Image 1 (cartoon, rainbow, N blue to C red):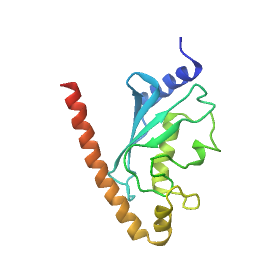
Image 2 (spheres, helix red, strand yellow):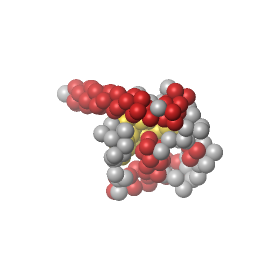
Image 3 (cartoon, rainbow, N blue to C red):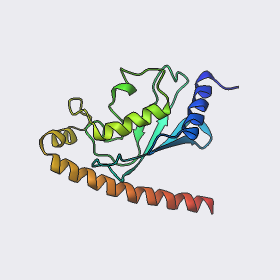
Length: 164
């Protein structure tokens, strides 16, 4: 028997499979509908362009009434991302609404990459560079984008080895 949260997540999964948002993919991890892996591609014409960023989403039985816990697994340099990968974003906290689904959450995070809120920083250095030294900020982001390629290819290799 499935719970209301599990049924909602099955609908979210079907929606993301049938109509995936551009540059985003997500699926339950290891047949556990309550834990998901996701990938966000950096938005075009932004410092994050060509980046491949991995995230995890963990839901509890109160979903969709409570937001999931969302974290970047990939290394991230961004004003609104803590060192542990947690994301400081209003829709994941005070502005959460049960109308948000997995696609909306990930699309919002993808938008946040290029539209940070430096006034509510999770990473003070990133926020300072974003507002005071944009060239250095872009340089640091470029290093994260390159690192995302290495992480992505390493994970792809590990997945292939699991299958063999």
